[in-house]
Length: 280
Image (cartoon, rainbow, N blue to C red; front, side, top):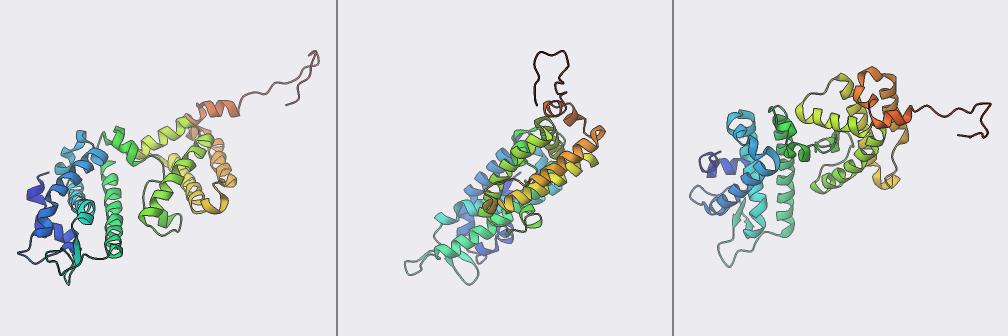
């Protein structure tokens, strides 16, 4: 993507209106041009994958999302070092000794607002990248979808919690723990398969049932984590296992797993002629 052609002062100020300056004043925009390059590089390296960089130009939806993401991320990365001042039209750069920088609380509030917009843009990009053939096998896909609970809006819709950057970081950490607990119930093999299917957009109806039940468990685990001290809802886990065991034909990977074999291993039965009896 040609950043200089795509991200003009007008385009930048459209997506970051707080930085809007009079037409002839290009101070903020010029200071950020190098930051746009960094933001684009990080987006490709961490989200899109260098292997699929061309998809940004070839896919109108990806490009539509990439431009505001670069604008916002570039500003967020740099704004603390710009000596911003709150003006009647937005945040400008301090240019005289008689003008004081904006308060830390105002800058923090602006960064939080933009960071939440950034989370939504990244989520939308992930949904588009899932449709790109081959992206689901990349390391970027694995890092972007490490668990079923990978979409920021799930914090609001499933947990009933307010979405903040701090709350999202906390939820992601809890989700990793909850995912490990789920592996103990659905098997590592089936968990790996489900995550790969999520990354490639190839889940079937039986998979969706397990993912939905698992997401409900994860949401309960996250929202009640502090009260329960991380103790899982065993009833919800049993419901997931019940689904797998009741419809085994729909879950061949689970049924061929080591966990399934362990659950259904035939127990030793004592015989009359045995010299010893074992109580199990």
